[in-house]
Image 1 (cartoon, rainbow, N blue to C red):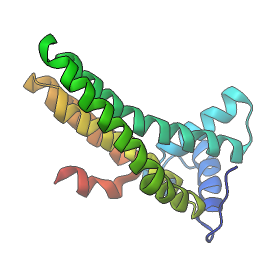
Image 2: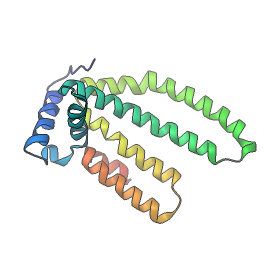
Image 3: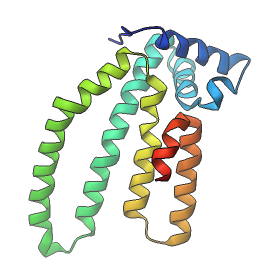
Image 4: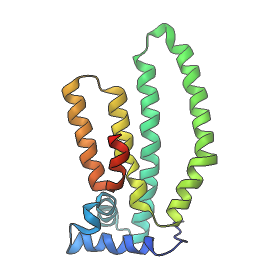
Length: 168
């Protein structure tokens, strides 16, 4: 399901999506990446507003988790073959610990934010995760700068209040 139990914010985002898609592309101070994604899901898959919001929310959740999983796998691949076995064990323990933390801490917090209607806010974790991944993995300086600036630009159109966190 896709509950909205706390206040009016969820309905506001549905209205914002419709405004953005029809008459006001700068709705929600231009932080419309989530709304655009939900709108495209409606058009491509024939979903209604609430179905598209549910799919967009869970895609955002899965994508955020995938970024961190990709970081672990890339780190493991870059190591020398003789160290891979110990690193693989470490990654296995890390994955189990991470899944435990997700189950006990992160997912309940996500659910709270989902129930309060903070969909666009959580979708803003994608660009943050991308920025962290670029910072950790990309070494050529010019490419790194271009990708970091692209991540900040994407963050501005996803959820700009996270910009302060990204710039620290």
